[in-house]
Length: 453
Image 1 (cartoon, rainbow, N blue to C red):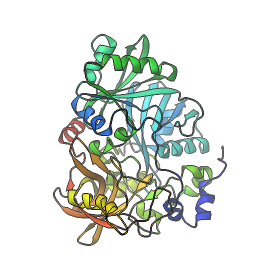
Image 2 (tube, helix red, strand yellow):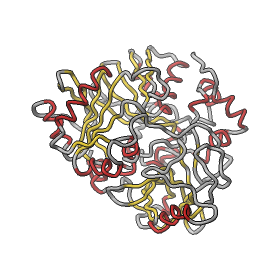
Image 3 (cartoon, rainbow, N blue to C red):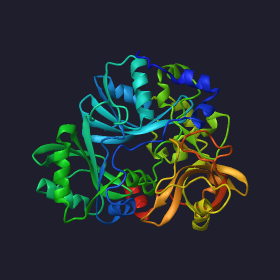
Image 4 (spheres, rainbow, N blue to C red):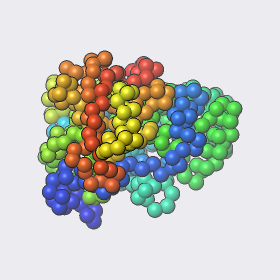
């Protein structure tokens, strides 16, 4: 088994606890190594609602290519999802939990060929799968292609997202004919600019579209063809600022704190995992127990993806969680006057509130802000920012069922006390911001679109 040079276990030991390590981590939050804006993030956000957005996903995610006769068995052993009818040219959201049934992470799993898969996403789920492969007995070979922050040279694949009401028309124009019939989260292939392109039928914030991918060397050629085909269809290249905020509309929490710092079997994993992949923790919620930051799949509305039709790590514990679903994912719409006052505190003498950057205000890889109901904690706000299409500042949160009804008035505590030593944290004071419970996804079109699928 390949050990990484400086492991998570030693980093936690040096810091005194997992919470202390994450709270004061010097690493930056997730960086998207593409241009922040091609025009401006407000117009770029609006493009996936009004015309068609072109997003470059080639650089910020990790790919783990798995090939071998035991590849499917490895994935089944680790995922809460069912693999019935998971044939070639299909994809799914891969969700993994620890032995206690708490979420480690999720990613998108592509079934590319017989016995050949590509797991794509943040490193949390990818690391877990790679560790289980290296420590287990599987006839599988793995090839890891890290994101452009850690990888020398270009990525193995280009990956472009086309989303919006004109996305399908753009693809048809680019391929010079009708799109092959393909269901949601199924794949097809066609030719663009003389090269074969694989395409996942996908949707972002409920809008129709495709995720296109192929060899990196062909990526610029394909992108130029897409821009040319979309010139009269309102195609808008979207930078990292706009792209990073799209999840607020779709209702996906991108990086819950992974349940890897405690629990059965995690000592060996911490000895294997590199300390640089620990991440950073931000937000007003404060507990010395790392377990208090963990969530279950049910807390994030992944229950519909859980299938107890196979054995997997954490199954017995997850069955117990299924019988006691205490929290629910919601959107919290922050009070406009309170948000304006927090931003306005920058212009008033005295200690200001924590800076609210737009469009996304998460300042750690994992965000955990306290949510109160009449002074009692009822949940965690986990990702926040501004949606230009809705003209609201909102967050995705997991809230006690008793306080999760649409229209319920709650309070988010914004800012840390005491201030941590993360480089992105300035001296500030905590403020209370009123918030109203709304559905997740927030956008009605996205809610009906995803549920229909």
